[in-house]
Length: 236
Image 1 (cartoon, rainbow, N blue to C red):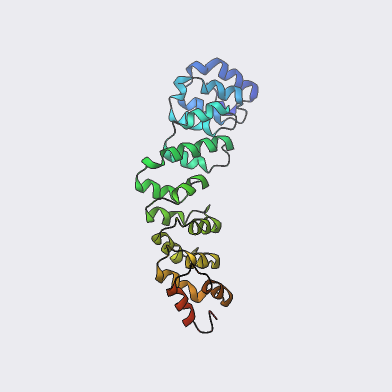
Image 2: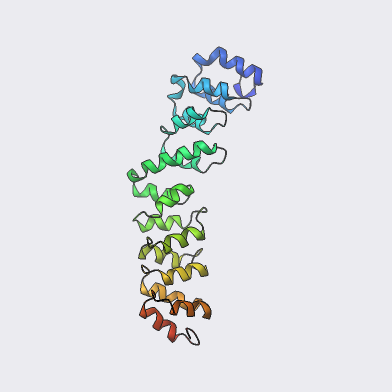
């Protein structure tokens, strides 16, 4: 039997028409790997229950751009978490399918073990990142801080919303990537959830203008205002 990857478009279609009912897992994967695999061929494989009983074939169909969307979205529900995590950030996966993947991951999130959440937080999509921001475990939040999709605006919004916990704010203040960002320093000072010592430690790094604005803010604690007053030439 010829290698399905080496067939041209006409040969590939003829091959699938003749052998679909007898294809084995490896052959189906080779057909899907052929650059001439089109929607008709992908749909034929997706409609063959014997082949779609294999997790590898379901995954290949979800990832393939030629797979009709209805089939791809259906198979998303049967993928293992590591595959979902990988496909959710794979830009070769069609955007509508990635949205279905995000929804499936969000639906499973509450049942995940802590270790899996921590591992996922480092590389997950933005949709999952937003959901994990409010996870109660500081270890999950700490892992999120290393996610390349995390932005300063995400952290500013989280801290400014009042949902950031004291432990989360402490992690941001000590993080080698985020701790030097002036907007985050200011947000930490203004957060009512920030531990006093953490908020106070940000003050020496702020400009005189910023300190003056903070000192005039009625929401800022008396403690922080007194710290500002003791800074040489600041807060007046």
